[in-house]
Length: 205
Length: 322
Image (cartoon, chains in turn cyan, red):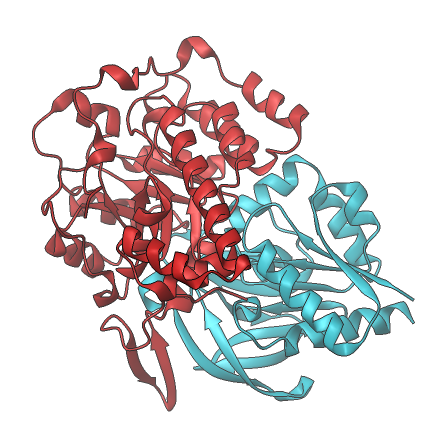
């Protein structure tokens, strides 16, 4: 069994996620390949998808333009595991509000029953690195890199909170959907990417 | 994973804080360079008003850059070009959700401090404004806010990175609507990267030391960049981009993203053009989509543009020797 993992290559730090995923696959000794994906055709063949960090308004609008948003939604509803990072977690959510500007009309996948607060920790100068823990998925210590990061202000039923920082929810999971507010792809630690690969492996079995 | 080549871990701009009981760090190279990585494959648009910023956000820009005047209007106006009004920058910060950048003059430490206090997301130490110091650029390691700098060559880019720039863009020739200089600059940087990579691969340390001396940078950053085969920070195209085809062309030359200055808001079809340039940047390697984007604009609405050979003011030469 060989896994095909895609990183949505519309906008953002696609390359860093490809590198981290490749390393995770190698370290786990799993057979698989990682590719940047844009088109419906490419996305339809995937076993798992990472929606990377970037600007959620840009990623949303442009994935609407080439109708990749539709196929992503269908695939996730059919059970394909997805990891949404920062902007990617915003894309997965049902509602997003900006801390300063308020309600945004941006296109979202509307799948994960969470309310998002964009730029929740402030602007770039307030971006920070800090140790966080995700004990329920056996990652007790992880260097969280938060860049103009969002946080989850409310969760619906069945949404598991994986991590909090300063009382704010920064990592969630519901079934095949995983959302994190920080950037694991900007660190050397690939344990979260490994966890995601294992989630894909399980979904294939 | 991120390249941290040339980073200073003892920089003044790095803040160690306690947030409740947790230790946190701000202003590290990971955070500054990481921020620039989030802009990749996107378009940063020059704006002078709240309305323009909203048009840019609606068009799918990844960030806006606030100026007092668009580069082409700076050329027309003459005089001294300075950082934009803080009130306008703040109004724009309050009205869009995407990051907001602003320009300061080359070497003007206190314009930069003012922008840092204003909490803009990135500062562009820019040749579009009148330089405040002909001999020194800002020592950007002293700031928590990340900086972007222009460069025409690899040596210029590495000097800026050693001063703490978290992102590089080509200088091009701002405010001309003429993409030729940006093309020249990115090709030069790419050629020089290929050269140092091949020297690195051949194991000729003596030659790398010679290059470091010629570039006026440390051997360390030359060797690390040579090993990477690319700049250790994100590299965007800027200066003279006016059409979707311009943007796609520069992306095809290996740029990580696009800055558009006067090209959008000095055109008569700004709204459509902003969307079209974003489309062409995202889908630059799909010719049919670039054609669709180009079709959205009307060449008769493009800014007239200037021939670089006849310019009285070459902005790209500013701060070039330092």
